[in-house]
Image (cartoon, rainbow, N blue to C red; front, side, top):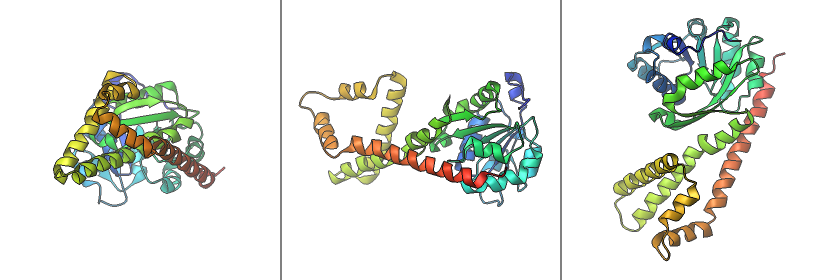
Length: 286
């Protein structure tokens, strides 16, 4: 189990490392930096320098050595493609000690697989962020492994609170969250694109239509979050008898948009589960 204390005064002294330098690592790093952790206490490793420049611009140290990063970190985010997780963890496993907290953001890689690849009693958490972490408006769900303590979860939540909404739940929810929010971001983008194209069809310039569509999605989401109202209540507040909105909603319902959206979340969730089953087979080493 991890021996890291969760005292807020200690948080700023934590050494944070990222294995992987993609968008998720970058978004999470930006969120953590907006809290109490200093750039001098962060490091990122990647096999090439292609994505490291933007981390250096934030004042974060970079390296090409994963073992070096692990040895100099307390909390290690494993932010590589799922198929690379076994390779990376096998490389650094001998350097993992009781002081480390390992946080995986690899889609589909289960806690059981992660724990099997790491030393016994390692504190492991599985985190699923989404792309809006890049602008600190993400939706993040995490689960603790069998050896991660509640304090480890509290520490992770504290580190990530500037990244957006951070919640803890059972691992079974991680794949659902992937379909709802990880993939759901793309579903929202598709709807925003369709909104704009509808306006273009009716004669509005494309640039203006896309600008208004993005603001519409942003404003609707913020109102939904801040009001605490059910989506159906807000939807009904927009509708007036015989007005434009009810006519448009009728057309959407005729097109099956509700059922199609539910099916999209279901399909993405099932695919995440399939990836998890594959990772379990690849990761077994005992």
